[in-house]
Image (cartoon, rainbow, N blue to C red; front, side):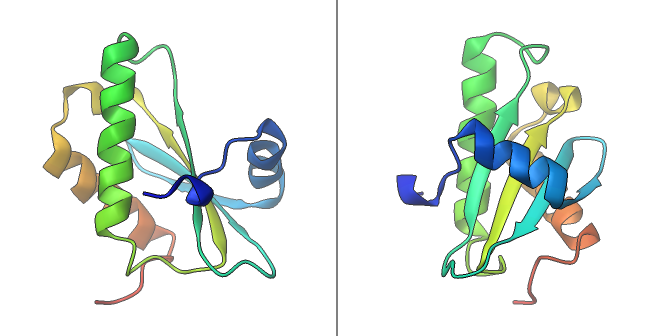
Length: 114
């Protein structure tokens, strides 16, 4: 996943939290903010220190980035997605994580049909 497609600045995260809409399941909270004049979607990740050590948190972030990369053709362009990981992700493998992410994106109606 290209670095231009990531949200890094705290201001951009706060804007998504305040102005975006959110939806959740047991493993994720996803905030979605519509951005005008933006051709691609952007992803911001947040994994709390309550979820394992640094190795575990980085592994979860890598898994989420890979899942988003595999779903990139189905994600709606022109949106900012802020994905917050919850504690149950610590015991999940990649395929369970991807399935859960697909579920929460379908709940929010931001996943296009194949």
